[in-house]
Length: 469
Image (cartoon, rainbow, N blue to C red; front, side, top):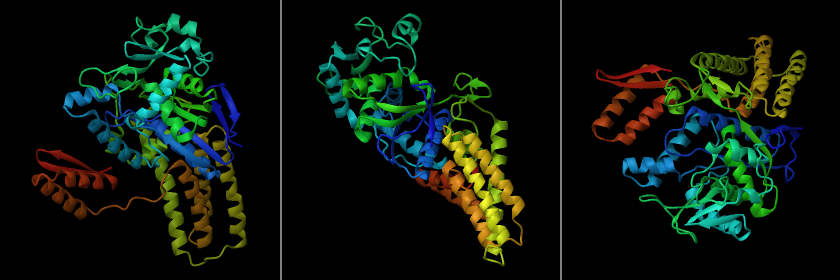
């Protein structure tokens, strides 16, 4: 039985799907105006692991995670570069997918793009207007927050408290609104912005309506799990509930899951503090498997502190797992005896307790920290119970168990093949020639190829220097 901490009820609840054997899960994805940062990586890695565990438990998972590809930040960058907004979003979606691949995050069942779902947004806004939940002023459509009786049920805030103490959280344009708490569903275009034609104005959707529409289209009016970072609880997820439930008259999501913040050296990550790291920057110092391991080493609802020391300890811990897998692989390939003897059969049965320990941890609100502890118990058991005299079936069976548990966590137990120095030098020479010929696509391809093998390049005045990560 899987139990999930539900932000809505503030307690752990048994997971009972809407449809037996199936999970419908929506997770808010990044706004694509730049390379993703390590704060974006935490929900990506965690919810990918949740999906993997449900599949391990035999569920069919329909996992939807969007890209917000129309937004003020995207438009600002497009204006700065003098290119269409779509060019910016497409560029960074491609870069985001590269980083996701590096972190061994599997593509979602569907990665919808807001720009491609405008018709659905116009339909939902029209329905909300017809039902009296929304109104138009000078081309802007607002949602009547007080009309939705359950507003605040996710964030556990009441409307009077919001109006009195949290004016900074409210959306601008208060002079036009019937109530300062009302939020935007559609807004008129500004000069130089992308826009779509609507019954109210040429303009674009508000952010909150996008996720309601994409979730409904790809998962249906009701879903099992909605996830994201805790910063999205209010107002984004609260507003999604208000829109979706007012529209359908049904409960929108059964379980709401939110991961806690990521801090950097005990401080909130911010560009002004100079402690802002992209996933790409981290990949230049560490294999992104180390970042994934680090992210899963704490419970998702606990704040996680990122530091160089903690990344080093994660690198060393991951190395212990890889070394154990290497040893088991070596024994399995070189053993003289293939069959299991009686003692090995008993030991394999005993090893099953580590799988049970792992499952107990994951069943309890996806406690990846305790699940990793179970993996290390299995590693220790394998190290102390195998030797050169072990049979290949015993070693390969232990390896299969280790790989199975690591795969749920998205940890790859095979090492990347190391390139020889000569091969590296040859690729660098080819990259230099490609750059001279202005074939920058090939040059970038070679750099990425080397990075994937753990080789970091540094372009200096003296030429290209390289080192192993």
